[in-house]
Length: 283
Image 1 (cartoon, rainbow, N blue to C red):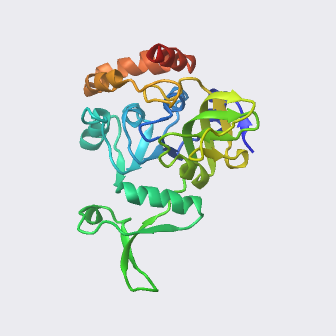
Image 2: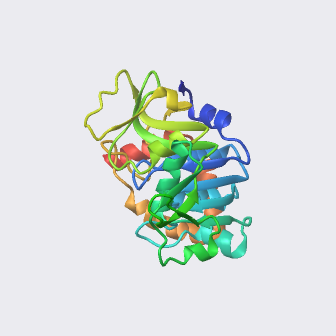
């Protein structure tokens, strides 16, 4: 059953050095505040998983928290490269980074397999693709019923999954709506999970049949962190800060400017700063 705790407590109790960690959110509801708390607490040797690693994982890689990453696309959306990611791969700075690249479809199916407690996922994919030449975890399997040859990838089973959501009730049930990505599957596939939310309310009252409700029994920890997805957006709360994504290209391009930004905006910051920035953007 979910425990309602502070963000500091959630990360301290559930993220351990050497863990496989998934932080999901697809353009919407990216768990920036939680990721920054991971950095502040000095967690290390993490194996990161994310369908679309963008700025948050650029930051985690740049501070040396990651030993590897499984992903399906990496970049600063609409802007360009992730410079800290590239520096780690090309120059091993600040440390070497093991990478395993997949397609979006394979990652989504692998999360679903993990959530279903299956050992691998099967999909029609990778036909004519070159990823199979560089990723030994993409294999083939023959359907026992039709004889069709299909792609197979290992299930994703994180030690801990971290997501941001809109609301939770006081029992720890969590509401997600809008673009939901694979947050539900990531939580259900994980041994432990942290969900940060914009607010904790008495009753969820899902506003539409498309809403996703994660039940309290499927969640380990819930922390109220208003603005916790900023500079990504939270539907109904604040918009995406496109200006920050553009600014990040220059910040992250240079090692020194990156380290200065981390010191000023992560190490010396607190979760409350996210609420302040988000309110300013929504105004």
